[in-house]
Image (cartoon, rainbow, N blue to C red; front, side, top):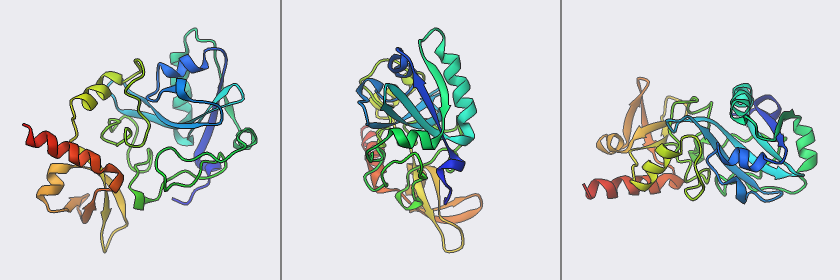
Amino acid sequence: MNVSMKANRSILRIIGDDRISFLQGIVTNDITKLADDKIQFAALLSPQGKILHDMFVIHVDSAILLDTQTAYKETLLKRLMMYKLRAKVTIEELAPEAAAALITTPLADPRHPELPPYSPLAMHYSPLSLGIPELGRDFAPDEVVALDAGYDLLHAVSFTKGCYVGQEVTARMHYKNIARRGFHILESDTAATRLALLKFEEVEAAHGIVTVDNLTYRANLPTWMHPKLVQFKNTRENQ
């Protein structure tokens, strides 16, 4: 998807004494480990553990920046204000150019080592060849639970922090080794390459040839998601 960050990404800035504890209680990653000029990938989930928003999180200049999809910026802002309650924080939008002036060193994209460095002025959609699902491109908000999307493997989920919204479902799937689905790269000689969330068992039974939206594809699980398939097979063998 060849789209500039200006058209598709927005940045929210959170300042105030409670900025860390505020985010720590609502997003999936451990914000207490976010040092200056470092970056995390994180998500805000529904109580049922489904991804509502995801974001790059950067701590810089006594502020936390959230880089998120412009299409969902307003709903993210509303949710943040809803959770704010009496927390001592101020939340405002920041121009990408202003954010770029604050981030003076290249930051590695925390999702995958083959992705280009993060920049507030660059696009952050991953190539389909890596098979990394993108909210808004490959799935809609409130549609997929975090671990089905592989967000634990994309370093967006901490299993050692305290409670956050959707933590109960996420932790249960993790500790009970529940892995049934994963995003696959779908390729065809007659249709554009895409990603789809498929059940491992169904892909296996179909020998990797699947039908999605009345089209036939070759389904390949991206390398980074192979631990989910191993987890699925191990669980099946132990049943």
